Image (cartoon, rainbow, N blue to C red; front, side):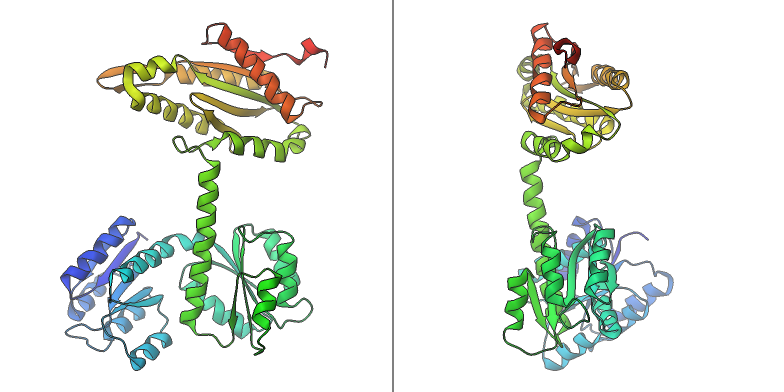
Length: 421
């Protein structure tokens, strides 16, 4: 199914705003300006990913359009210009994605977030933990409207097993009263493995004790709900906590990534190499750490401007992405890159280096009506049983400096045999 968005709205200015919001997210938007137009449209078109529906239309003043859209199994976001207790209760009783009032511009910012979530929430695993099948089903039904990938288990022990099996789980929603391991004990166990910037936990309980929420939060939960909870409050709390986690991930990505090439930066590369170094030493592969530099990068900038230099760096980065598995590829700064090549033998790794240098030399493009091409210099060192991160980087850098001293456009690999190991 295409990401088709159905907009049911009689106000053409508002319909245009929603169309723009949908289009900015990649939706293909279809507008119905009346209930009659909606009914005619749905006779032959059913493949809508989501719909925004005005509560009151000139020919359907009391929400009839909402029911018609839901009957066609289309996820529905209700837009309303009026709100009272009766309308509020009616909307809460319906299996809609959400509702919002058309009061100010903030409503449309919220709509943007909801529509974006409908497209991306499937990437987020949510684990629901409750020994009551009916409550579990109810919570999962609420979350399914938001397109999350769902897992549900009846107790804390099974929750820990599910968490180990499904690394995509980023949110746990757990009851307190369960046999064996209760909710607070589950929170404590999870926090021994995952800090709050890695996984969100929301607890709830049917016991009305003033200390219950504090116990959950102090044990490591991010939020708490008192049962029975309002679906609207449930969505708001889930929404806010997921967004918090996404903001943290974005900040971490920005801290770890080179802004121009989207490769790892120097700090993150060395962190990853250090973290996994012992595993690399014993995984039955040969590893070769290489430094790469674009020859005469200063001349490229002088001839083609900084936009030309940036183009060269981006093209080389794309070549590295195609050739070398993450996370062991990085831009160290300026025109210098670093990668870890892994293969069945040192010979194979050196063949990969030769292929990289040849592929880089073959890259060419036009900038400012002039042909541009470049060459690279490579220096590297083989990892062996006595290597450390520090010695490997030092040996690769020494080989790299030797290659540069030879005028560039060459490859020098440090030979550990020369040092007698």
